[in-house]
Amino acid sequence: AQSVAQPEDQVKVAEGNPLTVKCTYSVSGNPYLFWYVQYPNRGLQFLLKYITGDNLVKGSYGFEAEFNKSQTSFHLKKPSALVSDSALYFCAVRPYTGRRALTFGSGTRLQVQP
Amino acid sequence: GAVVSQHPSRVICKSGTSVKIECRSLDFQATTMFWYRQFPKQSLMLMATSNEGSKATYEQGVEKDKFLINHASLTLSTLTVTSAHPEDSSFYICSASWTAENEKLFFGSGTQLSVL
Image (tube, rainbow over all chains, first blue to last red; front, side, top):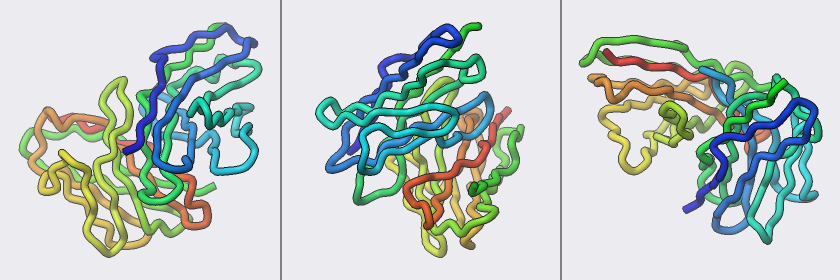
């Protein structure tokens, strides 16, 4: 069975500083990896995904994530944080073959301070 | 981009009543939809996978007689919480897979269910 770990419940950064939200995963075979963002009382919005190819994936709103197979990590990054980036971020994984449902991490609340 | 509409966004009901939540894919055909449940400050937990025209596949520990899922068309799946109890209060989110981009799931905006 697959699993996702987001070791930080909360990340605080100052506006304009770079941000990193950590994610590690466990899955049989090659992974499909995703990042989603959730605003209060809302559904999830897709940010980016990794399927294959370049380990650095660029997504929406200036976010990017780097796939590291040896460390089984898929950390979310942004060079310069905005206050509007404050939200709940979920990392998710599914195996390359088999069930298409995503397994989510526990979420990391990002707080960007003005 | 693809849109998934979920209705209602919020519902309050009395204990013992049933509540139906609808999930529609507005501009694409979704052969598979997923239903998740999210408790406050927790992650999304998969409840069931809904396949058009066939019975849903439930995750271990999810009562299929309590959470009835119907996927009668390629654009509509419904989740009915039967005989709701306060412990069923939660945020329910559906998602749908678009075959043209089947590695990306589109999520509804969620339904906050409060059972009194």
